[in-house]
Image 1 (cartoon, rainbow, N blue to C red):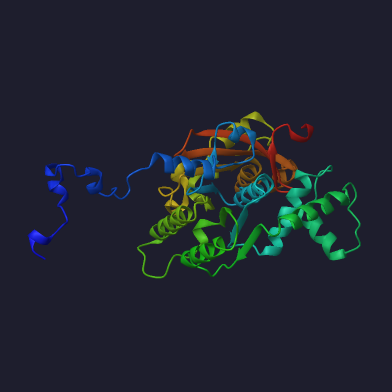
Image 2: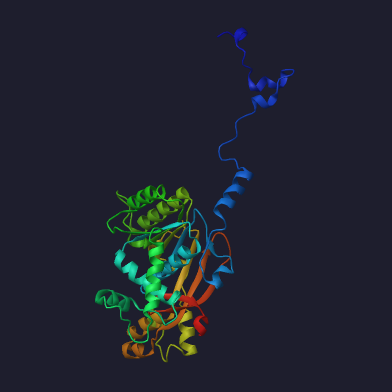
Length: 359
């Protein structure tokens, strides 16, 4: 086509055209340019994120938002999985229109059921709550009789609650799945539910990496965390993964528990070993995480220290049912850091505020 017959006008020459509407030749919007209206609509759609359900954290504005990767980190036996179960209870209750997916790499769905039932008997019940083994034995006997001091209605109410939630709680137990298989399955699931509330993974360091050669375990863990972060962004929902603190991060030989768990000097000694971000085992992908909470279970720490010092009998005598349990916010891209002293009832796996249930 010759220039004389071409009716198109070069945008660069638009300024020289008399009555031509320059808007017709405006450049397209650059990719990635923000739209304030669009972002406001997204904020309205997704809300302010999910609170943890404990006032000491919620009042600080601690929450996980769509696209976040949050790590719940602790040493062995300090309650990482227990925190995930308590979060599930809080969120299933508070967000009735949402579905939650729990990827378990350690315990099968039957154990998930028993642990959640045990915590629910304390959360909603009127008695002291049923332990994991009490719930299991009650189901196996089938006689409907409650152990002495417990109310069978508490367990039946917990069962009824979990049955109401069963369409919104998906438990995946495939310890052979690598992180890519986990992500692919989560994406497929997201297309089958009305709204995906959160994905929980237990736990980060035992999720197999994607196929291929990787330069050491720390690199593998970082890759896994990066995949989970990408999954959170893609699905517009939070991903919460338990993570392991290094066993070598704290040496119990630093002190001998000369006293009971109630002694102030013992509590202060345990408090000195509060988890820090650099304690994460193998790096644990903390650079990818938007939020990292560190757990300190005073009973578990005391018991480990007693065993390390050869004082197992003292530990058995002094470790009771309920104990101080701290959740520390040690990384938070969206807000402040902080510390929440709570109570873990080891018998039921229920984490509560201090002073709840009258004590």
